Length: 115
Length: 110
Image (cartoon, rainbow over all chains, first blue to last red; front, side, top):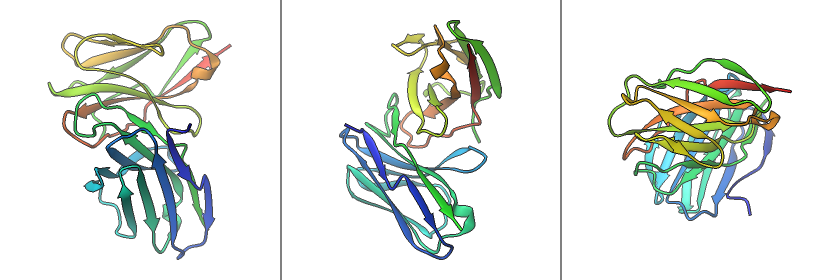
């Protein structure tokens, strides 16, 4: 069974469109994250949710809106897509985000291309 | 900004030990050292973490200096599949934020 899954794996869309990326984890973890990896390969945290509550919002434009319907899911909705949003987006989860020693498990990534 | 410094790239011969260094001179007493790796464009994979003591698991060993200002990740018998970018991260206890630096690109050569 896949621990952290994301859909879709690839997403190609035009500027101005709205799109969503879904993430699910079956590890029973309390905390979930979204990361963005741009063309320069730097991996940057975007959001962190703990027990469905937003903990971290790393100065991400408000066009990005995460939604956590339950502890096992963290979806990312992006409005009015821009060229600069093209990147690979990774979802991750950890057992206890606020406790030392909790490693993160990452999904396979969603490659978003905005044309 | 990342609180760690790593060499941008390293080479290792297949079957030999790969020793990846990391400097974290400003580490706080409650911060752990984590290592992850990213193979090609897959999602990062957790390897190992530690606070003060050396740690070993089925993937690697982590050696942390006594002053905790640096550490070394050791892959005892590197294989071609270990070619990846290796990230050394320090993480605050009780925090939810993980900051990835540029990492070290390890090339394992036959």
